[in-house]
Amino acid sequence: MADEMKVDMELDLKGLLCPLPMVRVSQNITNVPVGGILKAVATDPGSLADIPSWARSTGHEIVKQEQEGTDFIFYIKRLK
Amino acid sequence: MSGDLKKKVSMVVFSGDMDKLFAAFIIATTAAAQGNDVVMFFTFWGLRALKKKVPTGQSLFGRMLGMMYGGDINRATPSKMSFGGVGRWMFKKMMNARNVESLPNLRQLAIDLGVHMYGCQMSMDVMEIPREKMIDEVEGCVGAGFFVEQASNSDFTLFI
Image (cartoon, rainbow over all chains, first blue to last red; front, side, top):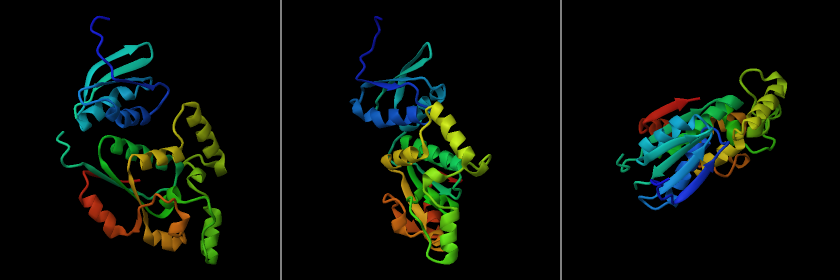
């Protein structure tokens, strides 16, 4: 893909259920530099609501979100 | 979000039921992960969530209580369909099959995320569960006054 963005860290959240996908994202966001991208791959449909909520309340940004089969893929930009 | 003023959540955990403890720890870990300062105040049956797996009680009634309602967080039974422990076994199996975290793991996660846990001193006295029979991570044994102060400074408060 031509517009592939630079990913600083990839997080495998497959098989995890609420609240773990969101919690793991919150624990790992500091492992990427400010302005960096954390890619998270989850299979829990609940994470579709939870991870954006986490981003809104903590002040980070989901710059891209896509679905591949049963995988929900979030590209999360660390803003602070 | 400015992040200057930390949001805060406080919870009274009154129930020692397995299902309600799940709700309490899931909300606590979620709130902590979303950047909240989280305070959990465990009282009465909820003290089970902080207890070690040791016998409790000194007086006759205290020891009876310790025997009839003994054990640690793993012994919590669901509020419905308990069937003398069969319900707990069934729910553990069903949750395991779905890869849901166990209660002790969720409690550990809450500790790792910096959730503050307090025991209610008065129920500890009544139920004869001293501090040394609870997990080391308990930050203190406090009264309602402490909780009300925390709750007054919180963005939301739950009673579970």
